[in-house]
Length: 272
Image (cartoon, rainbow, N blue to C red; front, side, top):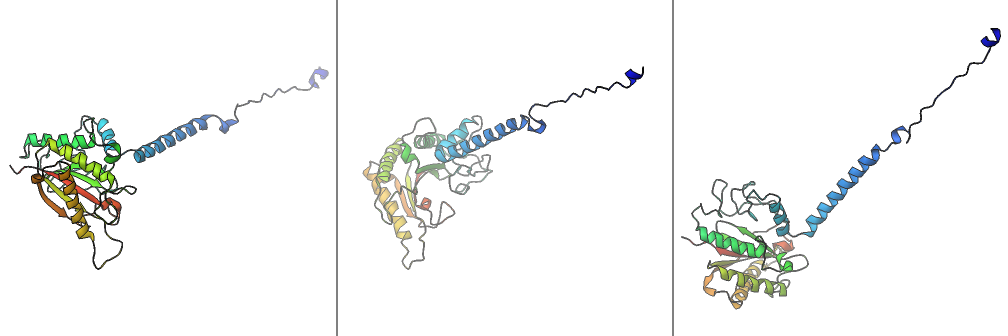
């Protein structure tokens, strides 16, 4: 008995081993993978926004909301944003000319405008912007063109880009790009009979000049565009006015931005 009482006690200690060392498990890898995927999607989105044109972005937006009628660029209609455009590149969202939220849309024919005329203007807009799946505008020229429908009519805005102006700097000499656009415009305008107005706009000069050229330049460029349209086959009798607005109606907040160098061609609605 005494020998058994003095026998050593054997204690077996089992150590629990956790693979990966506890907090160094694999859950963080899943979270990290989700983070990297989200960042990749974000940078892909930013790249696509930078690589596509304004009309392409609007087409993508329209594709994902086919059941909601959206104007290509609002002219003050009764859309979700009360006539403001959220797609316009570098420009402030603005209301259309002479329109109010309470008024019917200019394109639905219920506001007194001729429905057939509205359809014709929509067809011209589609040909210029590719809204109907086909476009008469070359891809490079499309970068210079933006359209919007207002109570006055269909406005086609042609503007300078940083790397590609419409006129030689400070002159009324058109660049090859403007010549191509003008020939195309004269052809497209042939499918309607609406009269035309031509507006010229310029950017502000960096310094105050005694003889500021912006008034003469905007007027002369507008008249030059009129002559180019007529030489391209456009009926001169359909041109109702040619106006220069100098730098009084900038398209973007920076008054000296090249984006403010632009021409507006307005297919006017008929008075009846």
